Length: 189
Image (cartoon, rainbow, N blue to C red; front, side):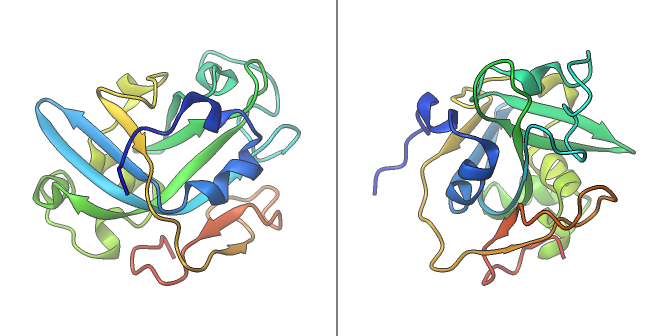
């Protein structure tokens, strides 16, 4: 299979529809001449009307990227970490898919250096770890997902996909909007 950037129209459906389709896709960064890639193994959808969604109370300076256009990054800070979301749906509607975990493919040593030697699940199992390993921060908020700095590429869907309630948040935790590859050793929990 030829790996290529996901087309812009891929991101047009809702976050809930796109989230399971992202499992197996490849996220790639090229920052300061260093390239890293990883296979997406865990995601969470944040949808319109969802009290856990950053867009629930409307557009602000912090969440503006979440309102589109689709096919762009929404990167935000939580505590001392950054989180990568892929903006979905129609422009003006705040929806996105949080990348919770990736399986490292290329640039593993670069990722380990950025993560101070972490290995296995501790390298990229969790949204903050994903951003740190890929070298992403607030300066990457709003970037297109078609490169050259940040690209989401086609991949191979896992043989099995499971869903669960959300983890790591206190609002709307029972929404079954977390999707993951149950065979991956890199899941966040």
